[in-house]
Length: 260
Image 1 (tube, one colour):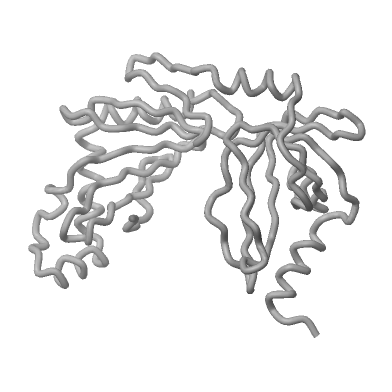
Image 2 (cartoon, helix red, strand yellow):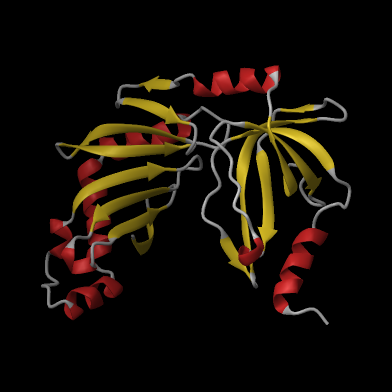
């Protein structure tokens, strides 16, 4: 009978076809922090494009390469940002762009992947009436600042991986800035009414009345579907956490989270 950690590893490996293939991957970034599953760690990285070494078939779509391992038996390996690697993998049964790492063979070179890397490194700038935004491909977002209630605040226009169009995000940003006082009042009133935040104030012996007006350093992020988040520095009353308000496409506040 398998224990829970063995179950986790078996389930992971069984979700991939047994056939092993060698592929070249243009890796997007280093591995992140591993997650735990049973007695194992799961980690990996995203790639921008790959090539099947046996068939020379080129796949320009992005995907993932992952592995599960026992920490005590694992000699850490990682990828360089935008490095090209030959990796022995098994393909996912559900998603052909998801791969299980069998072995990292080593660094490689390929003209097609080099060309994609060169294109990836070219700056993409959006110059708009609202401000100038530059695409950060590593995080799939445009970054810029706008004037909001007579202060410059950071704005992040999130895009789908590999995409550069942000017309929907800009449309929502324009609507917010056209009615910024109304928008700000709505968000701060929603914060003022949140009883979970009241408990933080009461535990720290801070006044509840008008606390929302003192929140500073807002930042705004907008998703491709028009959903958005506005972040405020909570400061001492909230243990240094940021207060994050989630807002839907219709500019209705939906949720508050404390982050950080």
